[in-house]
Length: 386
Image: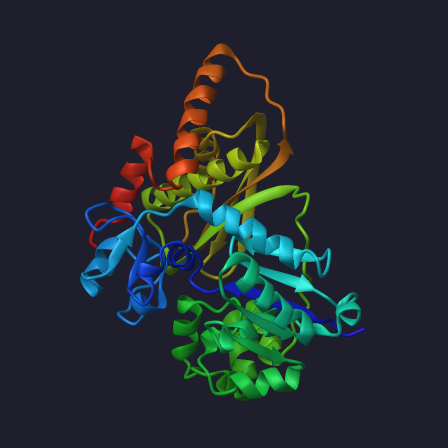
């Protein structure tokens, strides 16, 4: 049976929640993240701000230079999580195969359930209508035969869009003359490498298959398959997750160990916040690295269960110290061996109380409302030169 997948992507999610709750913000360039005088990045922004070149993950200083008249706000994670839970609950009524990529994005495999609701298109339109009426937000929905096709379909008509890519031929016709970065997994570095041999569009890939294989090896084979519309990835439900992870892909390959550790420190902080929300602890910390030649490695270490950012970071940093020192394209941390229990010493109890107090403040006022000194130091170093 052919797969029927739906990709749902909320439109400028954090900003949309703020506009919903304060209509006076509608139509204005709204930037959610840090304030202009603070160090940090843009979490998300309204479409009005994007017209000035502001983008997610951009340095807040750069965003302010591009859009000094914008409205800058700290995120309110409690509101966003509440809205996300409402949206996820809607998705979950159509299938039990839902992969929640983030608070505002997910895949639904409706292969076995579409007929129960009148087809995938009807499900997609119902999701859009229910999200709008029940949560007060808009989303873009894409329907496809694979994860890449569904994702591209949701992006095709944003915001508040709906689009279908029913088969590989439709996908190829749609993307044939677009930049190679439209293919899943092809980032700026790979696009730059391909451009050096004259490959800029998907059509160029089709016409130069041997060159792509010679240049990129197995990764090149994957790119060619995706350009042909072949994507065998499966939607995986994490209703009862065995692990949690976050990663960061760099625009340029990184050699600087200190820079990499600063990124790991911020990732550890994000993961700590997430498992605090779930009231769980992790026994195993795994470091994930992708080198510039697309070789992927993982290194793991297990110990006493923890949910503390400092402990997660310390393990990840020690693992980083032990790997080959080569240019790195991606770095990430995953937590596994999840449990709801932890045996603590007196020192552990004191640290747990401090972490719990920090979490309550962040939960109420937003993830970025308060930071440890080490996190501020990491952000300061990462923001140098902006």
